[in-house]
Image 1 (cartoon, rainbow, N blue to C red):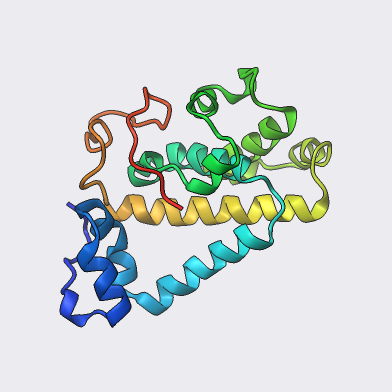
Image 2: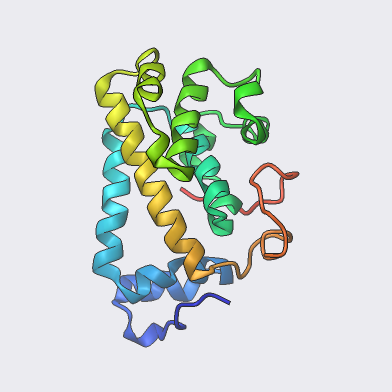
Length: 196
C-alpha cells in the first residue's frame, strides 16, 4: 500500500477530480502525488515535458536510461511502465532485455552504451564520474546533449527514488509487488500498460 494518504476526490479541482474518478485503480494510485500537491507536481511534470519537448536525445534512449535507473532505484512503478514516446521511437522489449548487461548487448549502439554507463555510475556512485566518463560521452554527444543526458538522469534518479520511498506498488503486474526479490524491467515482459 502506498505510504501516501488516500485521496478525497471532493477536495480536487474539477479537471483533476474528473480524471481521478474515471481512472482505473492503478491510474488513481499513480495520480496520488499530483492530487495531493497539484501545483508542485504540475511544475515537476512541466519540467519533464519541457525536457522531452525541447531535448534532442532520442526518446528510445531516454526510455532506456529511465528503465536502467529504475532498476538501480528499485522503483517498481517506474520499471512496470513503458512510456509511449519511447515505444513510438522504436524501443522494443528486446532493447529492454539488453539493459541486464548493456555493455554486452549487440543491439545497443556505442552511444547508447556510453549514455547507459553514465546513468549507471550516476545512479550508483556519482563520485566515480571522472574525465574518462566525459571523454566517452564526447565521442557520441555534443556538450548540449551531455547536459540533456545529465538532466534526464538527475530527474530519473531523484524522482525514481522518491516514488520508491512512497512504495507505490498497488496494482502493479505480478512480480513487481513482491519486495522479497530484486525487480528488473527485463524479466519476461511482466509490465503495465504503456504511459505517455
